[in-house]
Length: 183
Image (cartoon, rainbow, N blue to C red):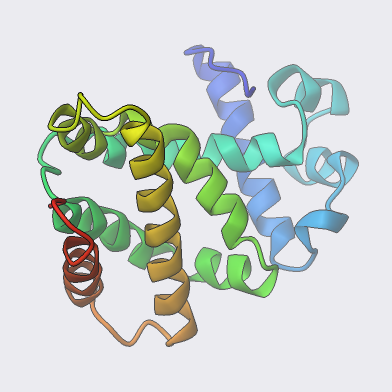
């Protein structure tokens, strides 16, 4: 688990390491990325890296948590359309990162990270609140939303970002609604 300190010096180190990782991913596959290379690029020691992160995937988790989780917690996301529009709208600012994920076949990592944080999202909590008498619904629904959202994003990237975020959100919401009593 990455360092969750609110100390501004620690936060700067976390951000430098995350940016160095992102920069290196442009030329190196995630599998070939080393802590030594990241630390050097970030201008920190390996000791500083390991004080703040367990491994390279932990850096990706930090980036996800610090940028995507606030979108998950948005109370205005009452429907899957709202939720998806928020995620796709945000993602449209990071097309280069999405292309890297596609190139390095890392969409499964994004799905796992999405699933890790999804149960606490406003949207999932709202839907699960309507299904409290159904054992296992929250886990199954979170898995469905994480997988479905990652697949929509992956298709959007594969199609060259042809659709607008609103078009992707509309397609996703229509498809999910067709599955049953889900907004």
